[in-house]
Each structure stands twice: as C-alpha cells, then as structure tokens.
Image (cartoon, rainbow over all chains, first blue to last red; front, top):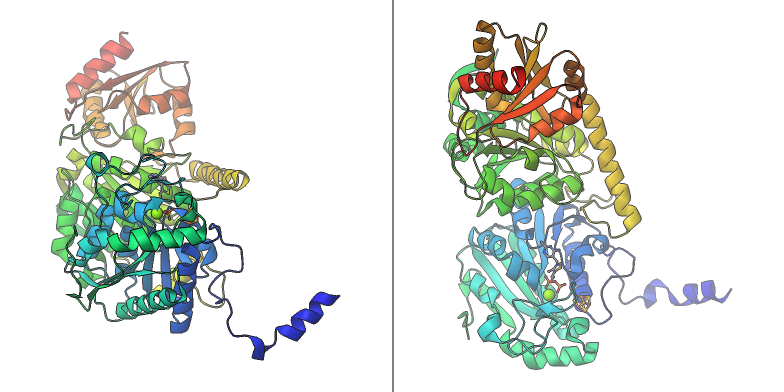
Length: 268
Length: 360
Ligand SMILES: Cc1ncc(C[n+]2csc(CCOP(=O)(O)OP(=O)(O)O)c2C)c(N)n1
Ligand code: SF4
Ligand SMILES: [Mg+2]
C-alpha cells in the first residue's frame, strides 16, 4: 500500500520539472542502453510538440536500428525499404505540400544503399527534413563496416581495421550534400552531453521551421555512438567518439540559409 | 459518350491517368514506354487537375515514391518496361506487404537482360507469380488494344483501392506504340483531402488527437504476427480470385479447338481464327483479361468442350502453366511462341495449330 502514497506525495505538479513528451509512446525503446538514437527521437518529438505540428507531420523511418521508430513516435509514419526514405518523402511532400515531412536514417541507409535517393532528393531541393544518424557502423545487422567507418576502425567485416586502399575511404556525404544548390541548411551535431543535446534540438527546430518557407532540404547529421557495435561501454564510446569521430566529422553548421559557412571540401 | 481520339497506347495510358483522378505519376525513361511521361509533361496535368508528375532518378526511386505517396492514400501510378520493372520488385513487394494501392504499367520488351526494345510477353511469370520476395500477388490486367490501355488504368485504380494492393497493367511494346481509335472516358475529379481521409482511414495523413497514430509497414518481427499478415493477404487474394476474373471468348460455341492468348497475341489469334475457319477448322479464342486472378473455372469448363488448345504467347511458355493447371491433362495443350521481339504471324499460328494440335 506504500506505492500510491509515494506517487501522490511526490508526483505533484509543483515537483515536476521535466516529463516525457506525449509524442513518445510510453513503451521501452528497442535501443541498447547508452545509444544516441533514443535521445534524437526525444528531441525530434519534443520539437514537434512544441511547434504544435504533430497532426500535420508525416515521418518516414528507415531500415536500421531505428526501423521501429514508428512504434515510439506517436505520429503517422511510414516504414521505408532500406535506403529509400528520401524517395518516399519526396512524393509525400510533393503531394502534401502543407504537411511537415521528415526522414530518419542511419549511415548505411543514407550513405550506402540509399546514396542515389539521398543525393537526388537533396539536389531537387525537396522541402523536407533529413535526420541522419552517423554512428560509423551498421548497428542493426551486428556491427559491419559502414560507408562512414573511419580509416583503421574495426568492424565485423573489417576485423583488422578499415584499409582504405581495399575498402574505400569513409564518405563525408554531408559535405557532398552541402554543395548541392537544392540544399538550404546543413549542420552536424551530437547528443552525448546536455549541451550538445540542446544544440541538436535547436537545429531540428530550425530545420522544421524552414519547411514552412519551402526553402529546400534541411539536413541534420548527428554523429552518434554505437556502443554495442563498437564493443565499448556507453561512457567509453562517447569518449572514443570525441577523440576519433569528431576530428573526422567536425561538428557545427556547414550551410545556413543556402550559404556554406565552413570549409566543406569533401576530403579534408 | 466520351471523347474519340487517335492515340498511341502509351499516350492513352497517360491521358487515362489524368482523367481517372490520379494524384501523382513518378517514372524513369525507358523504351518502349517513354511516351507516357512525355505526354504527361507536355499535357501539364498540374494545371488541368493538380496532378503531380515527377521524373525520378531511377525505377527504384519511382516505385518508392509510389510507396510513400500510396501510404498517404494518394492515387499514384508509374510506368516502365521490363528492366525497369525488375528494379521495382523490392518496392512492389513492400507495397503488397504493407497493403498499399498503386498502379504499375509494364510495357514489356524482350529479355532477359537488356534484351531488346521490341515487344514481348516474357514478363508474365514476374507479374503473375510475384516477382519480388515473399508470398504476394498483384492484380494483373492484360490490355489487347489502345482502348483497353485507357480503360484498364481506371479499372486498375478501382481494384487497387478496393483491395488495397498494387495492380499491374501488363502490356507490350506493340500495344504501347501502336495508334488506334480510343474513346476516352469522362474525367473524374481528383479526390479532395477530406474525401481521401474519409475513404482511406488506414492512410498516414497526419495524426489528429482523435485517433491512434497510423503506421504503414510490411514488418512484423513476431513469427505469429507475420503469419497472420500472410494469412490475411492470402484471404484477400482468394477474394480477388472469386470476384474479379475478366476474360473474353470468341467463336467458342461450335469450337473443336481453342487458341488461348492474352494481350497482343490474342489480337493475332483473332486473325488466325478467321484464316483457320476459312479452311474449315472450327477454332475459337479464349482471352484472359485478368492474368491474376486467372480465369481458372472458366478455362476448366471450356476444356471439357474442346479437343485441344494452343496457347500462343510471345515467350517460351509461361501462361500455359496456368492453362494446364486450370484444365488438367484430359486434352492436348501445347504452346506456340516467338521471342526476342518477334511477333508471330497469323499464318504460323494456324500452322502450329494444324501440326501441334490437330495433326499431332
Ligand atoms: C535491401 C536490404 N539490404 C540489406 C538489409 C540488411 N540491413 C538492415 S539494417 C542494415 C544496416 C543499417 O545500418 P545503418 O543504416 O547505419 O543504421 P544503424 O543500425 O547503424 O542505426 C542492413 C545492411 C536490408 N534490410 N535490406
Ligand atoms: S546496436 Fe548500436 S546503434 Fe543499434 S541500438 Fe545498439 S548501440 Fe544503438
Ligand atoms: Mg549506422
């Protein structure tokens, strides 16, 4: 009989400083503890709620660890085939120009199998938002090499480290995309500290706001950890990410209001 | 009465899409069907009805554009020819699994591989038996004239939405390219947003507070759940089989022999029938119009009345398998085909009937 007492005593309106947005379904996430995916989900859903546009939003989920994003996001969603989300979003936005449309995609999804759909949707300047989770690995299928895997980085299909001579160089697709005229806003963020989380949320807001003005693609890369795939603890993975991922994938705005704001050579 | 025009089959498909109230067309150029998108782009359907036309970067993209738009309840269409349709198979399987309506036009050319740009019927298996992965079927319509190229677009949309499943128009390079008279049906206005939402409550159109969120997916990781999905699909296909069979017969009342053919081959067989009958051979024609659902019962019934059947196809023998499954082994059933873009002549079809069925 103690439970109800505790609840009523503690869960009073004046004690609540933070709560789960109603746009996140109340169920356990399928992500590994420590993974960045869940944080990005929350930021995206909080932003939709704050903007009051949940009833006007159609989301497109990928194939990857976030394949079940539609189970967690309490909005109408369509699950794309691996890599094809930008094609779905193109048609949805063209036929529903007054809706807010986003894709949520991993690095394998967006920068390997879906490269053509990504580049061409961006180049056409479609008016939707792309949220791109770059964890440098194929999380879902068990930690294989991704197009974004760093040189020398180990994965289950590069067990001795990525040899760029035989396995190719990591693809900085975000810089490539920033150079396309149809793209209005490109930024690279992270979600491993409260400060970074706040910045990511701001970027999401900016990206969604610009859909009202039909300015073209807004593209947000979130450099994220995959503690399971990287075979590290969450804390180690965040440290490793800062030391290895950020130098290669530097954080910050790359293109704002259609103008490049930082050196964005593809190979740096 | 609708408007009378002289048109190519491909143009008739495009004009019919506008008139059927189609919301969007997404495609990629390939011979022999590029006139579909060319006609649409020239016609500016955006001004006529508000219809969107977009040239995609590949057939993979076009079919996934269809998937996304169909998931929101929109009426969408693509067209392509054989190699492009092969690229679309993943997307078609997803749409069948997620139960989404869309119309896909295949103006078939000869294969395999890059093959030829000339007409063929070699994609029968791919269209009728699934094509992509998993246990699914598409509704498949086989037009034999420019008139049917037009009418089947409307019919395909009706059936696709009635059963929430992709529907294919399986045509060929000759029907796509040839010009004939066509009576165009009167335009149907595109659905308003309110009509779309009330007619398609399953569609992802943005979640109001008054309902649960809608998820469009073909994924169910729980085996019991995925089996339920499959059982539901199979029940739907049985219903389609029971209710939607279309076929045409010609001269079957006194027939001793039968040509069985779809699409262009059936047009050739009509001429062969005349030639054979002038020689005193009593031959009729059975033309399946829906290839799925295949007219199984009707074929079975007619199989009890004739001595033999010649299945004429522009392929190495594909529909003949369904004819044999429907009729059984009690009579002689043989295949006659030309491939690689060669259209059989009426004379060689008669000769095949004489040597393979009557004399054989
Ligand atoms: C056509 C196709 N090929 C391969 C797969 C298998 N597959 C599923 S997810 C995935 C990689 C996902 O990696 P990423 O996009 O980086 O997402 P993450 O899991 O890392 O978030 C692959 C290869 C598939 N589902 N479909
Ligand atoms: S495998 Fe990696 S990306 Fe997937 S949920 Fe686990 S930590 Fe996250
Ligand atoms: Mg990844």
